[in-house]
View 1 (spheres, rainbow, N blue to C red):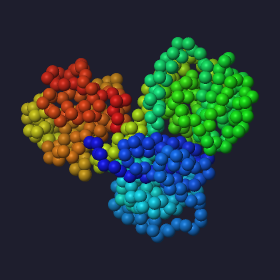
View 2: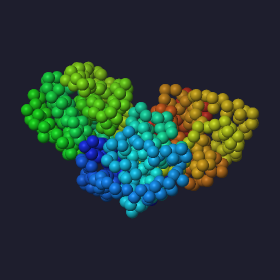
View 3: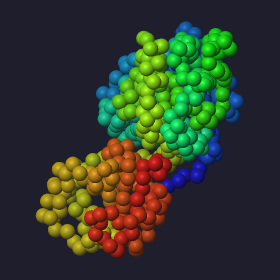
View 4: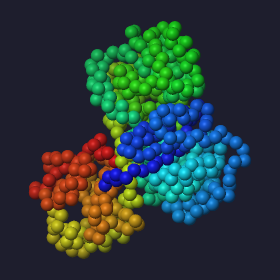
Length: 555
């Protein structure tokens, strides 16, 4: 299941005064996790005002800095040939491949050149590096760019997205936001693309997982006292419109007595001097930190955060930090509304900031304690580990829902001696009985049947019996003719459990294994299952029982 060979990974992402720093910072998090495992990571960024090229190089990663925009540089013929050759063998459906070149992303203005121009600038560097994977994290790039990039290297591509607003030619797609589901990406990606959706994949630096327990303990102590002593203000790495100063001014008349404020700003923030000048004469204790490298510690020490509804939302959630959230860009609105509806954060009204902050600061300690509890349940800080595991262990395999046409295939599999000897009921199954069972389960909303396909061929089966309360029991097996010793069991297990936790929204999966099924016992342990007592209704007394909780599944 785990592949040890070293890979080369190329990341295409940008930072700027307009874009902010979030895309680069989360890609750096993933890059560190991959580098720790021995893989070589290189970045391609464009020289936009406020780019973070120095930050990337200080982190120890290679960097190609694309030039500032210039007219007339596009080798159109070369790009067109690249795109056409990729389209011919693309996994995108024919219509998607034809329309990829005509789609303009809603955030195209974040990149001051066309996708075609950017691809043409990147292709020589992609060819020279010859990556195994390309990671693209850019709202201005879509399938058009991805097709050309993959064609240049003949490699796989992972897209990181938060918007579900443009087509992708990705093999793997990660959306770490709360609220987006695989249904949002239907028609926007190839059928075989593997989706990683939800906050379990939030790309947080390892320091947040390290500080999580201590931070949650502090939250519990704060809930008992109810005191609000320390507020952390962080509105992103850039804050080009100086919302930070507006927040500090609005706090002047509403802070509780003896409450202090810590402000964190990025090194490229253009208004640091103005913020520092206000802090020096503020009517409350206020310190300004620039380029802080201990954000997890600062968040853990704070009682409340005032922050933007961007990627730092998941950092605060991991540490259970109650938040008053500001919407500073339209692409943040969905996150803010979802977190407010979930009871994780309160959203301040930018149109009347002083009154809004006064109202929110008056919220009860009990409400902040409940926000902390709900926030901590959303994100455990191990998303980068899960994303890296999927990159390293990626296989060209998919799960799909069972269909009526699968009835005969499953009948033959279930009756094969190699399958029956590991079933609780090892007797042969009659065709009529199987048909009735299959039709009944196919129509049962509390039972999920999936087929595992590799290389376009059905190679295995998985099912989930819903037990209620976010729990289910699973079963699975490989087809009798599926090649053994090639990792298919591990891949089927990974994909099936991802389906349970990400698509079925389960928080606990149970399994039963006969003692003589050594391969299944080993796989359960490798996937993170732990021994468990038998649940109600489990009748196979001779079987060993296992349980896996969502937070312990690292894929």
